[in-house]
Image (cartoon, rainbow, N blue to C red; front, top):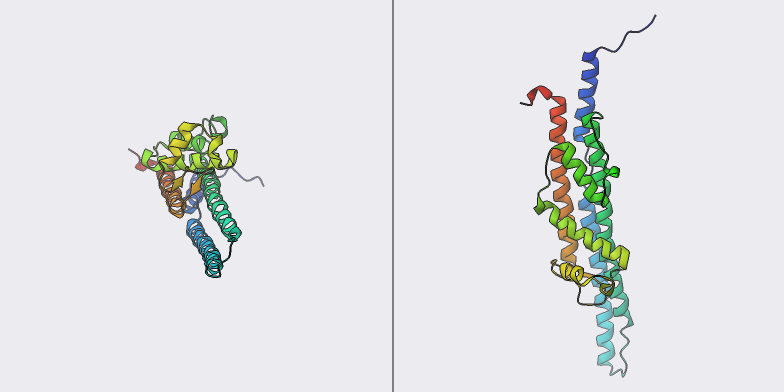
Length: 230
């Protein structure tokens, strides 16, 4: 006995079920940035404790009348703080890159192969290419107020990754641009990040991905109920 072709009503039902499940999938895990914030706070508290101990040690030397103050511990704690905050910024860009890739995959699945180009076929950095892909195929626009802090984060990431954060290795206009970002210090030999910057960058990633998630879900809704589209 030969089975006939799968009827359209069954195909449509299966497709609808798949799309409903796709709609509930989050490219940026629900608690990812909450856990990240917890990790940041723990790291900051660790640094504060280390710094307090070293400051206490210095004061004890001063009180004892030491001729030469051993402040090598402060050098180490400052290094810890600098490397820690830089790694947070770099991690956020990696997290964003992965989340945007997943969102492109969600959109592609919703469009059922009606895609004219892939993000990898576009010029530019992975983040901007995926933004272009999402906007063109999803028929929505990412507002500049959402993207501007992401551009700043990417500029910081590039300076840290490609130049080790050394300000002398950066063009003067880039140093000037980075210096205008709240919580970013470019007055020393290396870029310095304040805890406030890491927090606002994390919030910028959250806001962007929440918008993209909702916008992609609107595309999925139209795929589930195409008759509802005027």
